[in-house]
Length: 264
Image (cartoon, rainbow, N blue to C red; front, side, top):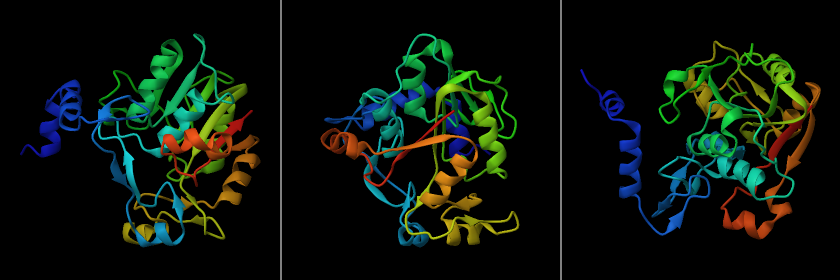
């Protein structure tokens, strides 16, 4: 039996995307993909634990997500740092970028900025339709050579992996000296201790405890930074509103989210 999802996969992705552009056309511009849209969509799951613990990257946000490329304030923050601030990464023709779990709008921006060195990776490459090629990668054993990546982007993945120290060791191994890894996770602002869940915890209990049925943990800010530094990274927390409050407001960034810029 053909489901709605299966039928959708029979339609070429450019046709679907162009249809979205027509349906959602309006006066506002997505800061990531550049599409003109009528309005941004709301994001977040609305679970009680996410609001109670003030989980950045999980709480409800209104008028946040582009209906075309699905980028939200998280992707906007990354592209803001890369493109708008003097402290951002400077693209060159020979830059090497590894993008884990490649977000739609952001992946296109990164690929277009330095196409020769951009590679998208995921544990299940077949999930992606917006890129012609996504390589298989497992954070427990990355396929890249040592000291080979200038910019490593991995957003909202580390809360899923069984072994965080191993994953961070792999990221640090492939990062060039002086390179930058952007490693975002949901951060609970009102959580005293990072929550670690075993594999035997049910999906319902995961939603109740950490706000998503496939998450193994929920970090607080001090312990997440300590985890990154314990893996050997120099960590900078970049605050777009401290850097340029006017522009960060125009971009509709989340004032509570900071970029974790990890350097080797």
